[in-house]
Length: 320
Image (tube, rainbow, N blue to C red; front, side):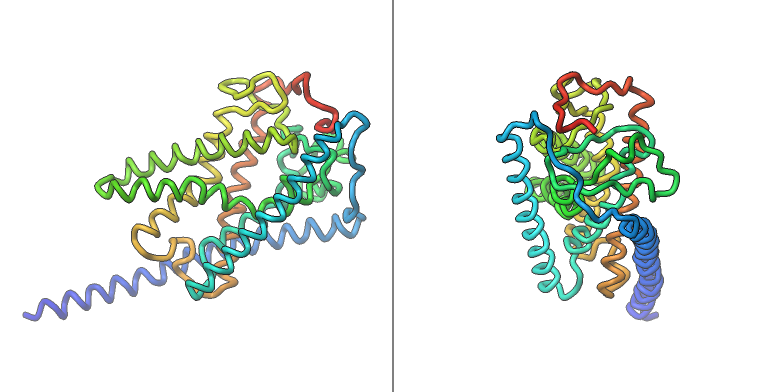
């Protein structure tokens, strides 16, 4: 009996089964992305038609020139780093001959910006700096949204806002690059150890980068828990529990997916089922918007476990 032909036939049948499965996964995420973007378009078009495309008044009389200069420096930094992310996205896509994972994530993370008002869906869990370029919130155009004082709420254009979401891939590559170098010297590590290390790296990355971003004064979390908080009692406090949530909902899946694909030398499972550029981009949008949606749900639960009191030292430019 010719076993080689039998083995080849079995391999071909397995491949035939896997291909539709991979295509189903990618197309499904692309459909989810299309649904999110369609709803976002419906929200933003109505918001714009009602006069939302205008700048909100900036500043307070008590804001120092140093703080204003810092805000504008962050604006410039944001634009520069977004340009870098786009450049690398295009470069990697050209090298691979298809939309790369970096490009899909850059596009996907950028499309999340429309969910920003949901941080204040029913309570104020996010305050934005009034010195930064901003537009009126489109929260009232999101189904069920009932945040406090919608006329005072704003959405940043650059700093920690619309365009800045395209920087989010940095939070994925920041833990993965050193992690990959570390794991390269430990090929014997099993899945459990690798995933545990990825989770720890994601937590540390968010804790460090989020705290740095908070210290710029671009935003604050007024209802943040004091439990295990860095700089507890101050407006720039940030809880370790928040980093755990960010790592679990916003970073872990992306970093683990990239690491697995790198080890196997294949496309990440999110994109493996299609070479169509639009399908791959929409799949990225689908995954990122789902992660953002779950992430924001957690932040809206914060007031249920805290007294929601804004720290006494919160500056005027971070008050609604």
